[in-house]
Image (cartoon, rainbow, N blue to C red; front, side, top):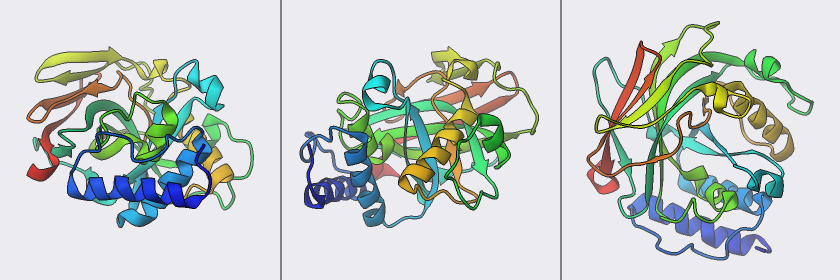
Length: 267
């Protein structure tokens, strides 16, 4: 158990330093957080130290049986403004990862928050939170951490380093009212299919990710704001990538998003 703020501060400083320099953390920089409360304290301090605007939130799944252990089936981490890319038509942006750390690509539906309620402290449904979403896009989340074992020690460790996020590629908008839940989604790496699925397999769907964040805003004062992007979860899974690889996410027959993976020092 991490007691007091000093150990949490040291862990946060280690992750922020590694992210700024691009260096790997072969070992976790302190005692492993045992609870999500401990992990979010580290994350909150790291956000304050990082020095960039929070322009969104990634939401990830906590699988069984860990969801019962931690009392929730989702986790979150910040997406910083400087790591968000909106490519032009035909453009393939370069997205940096920690070459000696962890790196993955994920096909995701991205929801943008519009006007928000004055108070989050109430019970929410997926239908109710949908009213506060003003845009739906396709995209790719680039998951990367300087700690290569970030996903091997449970969700609290993942939360402690920004939820393992290192960037977002925003693709085309989907018209409001479109029923995209059963669209076939595929993620390819260098043209080879790494995973296929539909959003109907993602717990209670993309809007469930927004509901989770509204609940977290009530319980932990998560600083949600209009205009922030919500990366709602890996539709086809978390697919490891290497520097130099081309990642493409395809949604139905009409939507495609691509990026090229590069090293932090090459970005």
